[in-house]
Image (tube, rainbow, N blue to C red):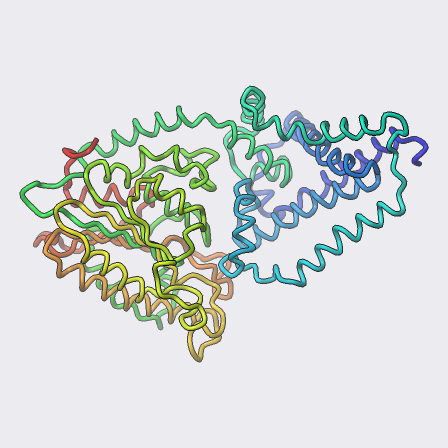
Length: 526
């Protein structure tokens, strides 16, 4: 076969294409493919297939350029795409979303924080198997398959192959090339939808196309449009009566919190959640930005007031481009209005790039895990809500009432996995989750008691970011909506603050709703 190198190379590329086009469909279950597949069109089907061929060719060229062995290049390319398809299917099975381009930015975090990603299987056995497969199979091909590198001008051919394989990827980062390519991909993909794109183009091509859109997206126009909507929406918000003490706003994002009594679990006791309902000026069920994970999506929606669909390709991981949204998010507006802004989260400050994103989103101060006295062996994997509440109370006590204070708290206590030893004497994941819920409820009561004694207007916004990934209970949850409460406390409470009927709400409207209830004015808004 190797006496006809050109024919063999084209045959191996064609074989790789055939296998990849066949296996790409397994990235999603058949049910999901039927649900999200766009209306059939012969022209679209042909375009979708043709659009994937250059991506396959570039990966094939990459394997070929380091080996000059067509059979190896074909096997390597097939393995590469099949691995991406398998990862996408595994991710979908776990959190019902296929692989997206922004997941690549989380690869290091997955290995660094295996427990929080439920990836404990990525252990030494995983690395041994992966090493043996990649280098063992590659070694066998290098030994048994002859290369087809021409004997004349050998160095020139090697350089040419490397340029063919790598230069197109490099040029994607070059503006004059990226912009027209991004425009073409935008026309091809349409409105970004990861499930639809995975069905149409397969996992890896979908990842590449969405990445190209992310690179080439002209955010200035988007931000200008969002800014215009933002100012129209807030009109009479932000500020306070100069004759009175400035308000304190505490937003508590409770990780994986959902009132399990909605799901028929009557054994759990949450007296302080019941108390919030009675104190709340607005409460109800909160729509989920993403079910079972990706806290940052809900977090950003609340902090920004922006609808995820308006973020276009940034919606999957908004903190990658946080600086573009600096001027339109609530913390920046509050800071510009003279408020102090503080973000508190008892976890590693680099996780989800919060150490870079939060200052860009307008937070003057950050309190992260390194400022907590937390020993995982002694205290469990996460800082408890009791310890977090004490830190919040200390932060509140250190503030003055001369200007508004905005404190955003993102808890960790309820996060999975709910494994033995998290709660003494309890092994069942559901029972562990319920017990931690009750511990968090108790801590919430301590926070409310303290805030209610302050001599200033206080507003508490409490919500769950998403339903837990508690697969032993439900997969998926019958109703993934979480709970939220907007509660006036201390001097903010008025006799007319009677309990209200439940109201469904979206995360991006929470702070706007709170500010309207607080009757804060826009006089200080810049």
